[in-house]
Image (cartoon, rainbow, N blue to C red; front, top):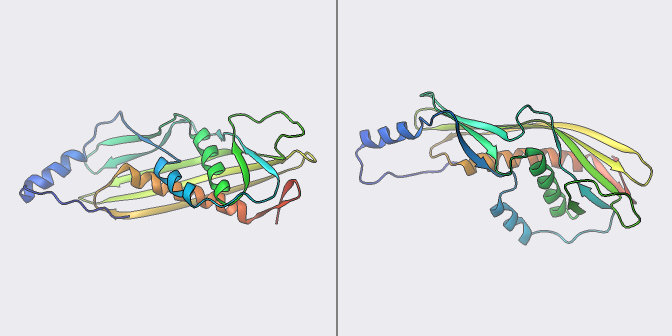
Amino acid sequence: MIRQHVVRGMSAPVAVGLLLLMGCSGKGDIIPMNLTPKAKEMTNASSAVKPMAGPKVVVIPFEDARADHAKVGSRSSMWGGETDFHVSSGSAGEETGQALADYLKRKGWLVQYQKAAPPESENGPNIVLSGKILDLTVDAKRGFLMTDIEARSKLVIQANNREDGSSIVRTDAHSGSHDNVFWFDPQDGEELLGEVLEKNFERFVLNTKLEDRSIRFR
């Protein structure tokens, strides 16, 4: 995505100087990011498909194997400034779980997100999805007037079938980039990281199938 911005009423040297100052954020600054942006959720809500007949699924928060559970990247400039990106909730594991549940709901799955696996019962879920975050990063590197954005993720997704106690596990990694973004906005990073996450979810769905009250590999 390329965002254009016109600086009005300024001479070229002043405009360039302003851009230089904006690129020199000091270390310690933090920009909040959402892995499930509200605007995106509202758009998808209007186009969500009707839940299909199938097993009941619950998604719980992902385990975060990274050292910093809130940080999801940074913005740096050629002049030495650096700003960290943190998930707004403080837990990338919770937001990743919520993002997976939202994705599956748009695909027609009968799914809910819960912060903990519910106890087994007759009316409880048939499948519990969990996972582990191995990598989840979006980096924005500002050069002269332009910013390059790169995002990557590596996730382990595990499905536990309560019907027979079996489970399946799949690990996927994906990356993406937007180069030469003229006017960088944190939303650019959110959207790219969201696209990368959904690519991991998509691969999991494409390589599995729902059978009766269980999930299996194709």
